[in-house]
Length: 212
Image 1 (cartoon, helix red, strand yellow):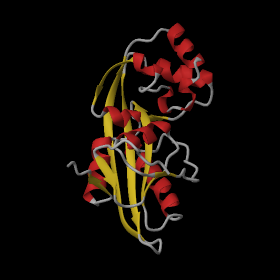
Image 2 (cartoon, helix red, strand yellow):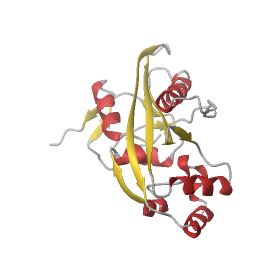
Image 3 (spheres, helix red, strand yellow):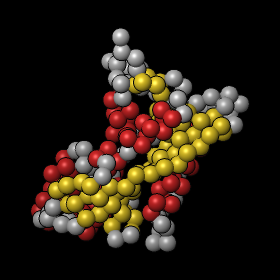
Image 4 (cartoon, one colour):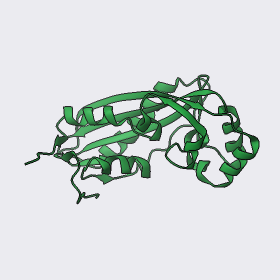
């Protein structure tokens, strides 16, 4: 359980669970001042195929994760999420090794790609039944600068890209590769916070913290 000693703009009014082991998503939640639990889903994500539609694929994965955790924690609100990188309609997953990461970044060099994060918010009753479910997503366009083979190899050798969709981390050293972003920056990090906060407030899972 993450308990915030420093007050943020919001407080948690319903037991809240983040169904993700991502440190980036956890940090975004912490910045809001929320008390929450992290429980990683046991669901194994299906590998993307050329037939998969990116938005549907991400939404399905987010829902699978949220529902898996929600089934184990009645009386809670659970947020699952899935972030994918899309180039010319094709989903780029996490690299299998350094060679694969170099190949991905070479494809992204100098071009625009799309980052989609889908979220599923599930609220369960005390008996474990699903009281409400909401699936939503955000899309951002990322413009990469031209990357030389030497730069790509050096970045991949740092190890940062090896567990990242698209083989880069905009919140890490990989930020130097990005020329600009159209849309939500936090969406590229892993959670579209404007949409997440709106959904949590709408269901009174979080409340605005009162200031005397």
